[in-house]
Image 1 (tube, helix red, strand yellow):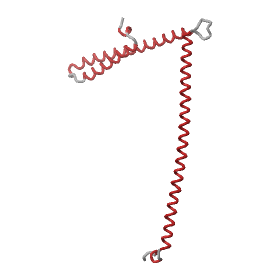
Image 2: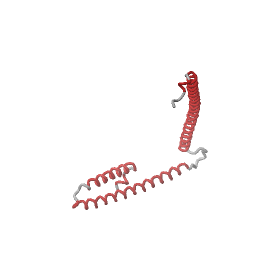
Image 3: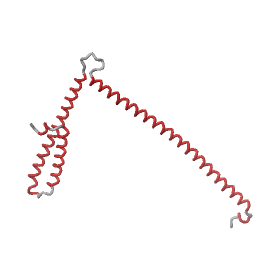
Image 4: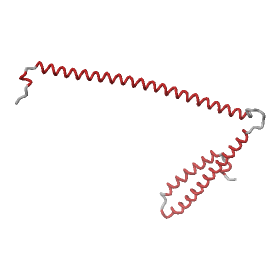
Length: 168
């Protein structure tokens, strides 16, 4: 029996990950080896990489096969031969769990909609406040402009005429 058949899928993944790390470290170390002996280690490294890739592919195939078997066995369990309209207790528990998930999702969706409406109301209020402040700023600017123009007119009227003339 091979080591990959004995271990669980998660243990296999962990082993392959650690093997992949070791192969990467060996690639780095090979770069520091003298040219004269580097080729034999590169050949061994390529062999190890190929074997690692083969095991990864084998693990993926086994994982897919286990998923298919699990899916088929669970679908066969849900077929009920009893007269109970709700199926077996296992099926009833599955339906209750699905209903619970649906209710939880509905509750979260309603809460999200409530938050969105509150945010929209706050945004509308902020826009109204900004519009009001803009009008106040525009009115203040107009008042300042009128005051400056009025003071200039008063100043020019009160000055003697010889001060208003420009020199030739």
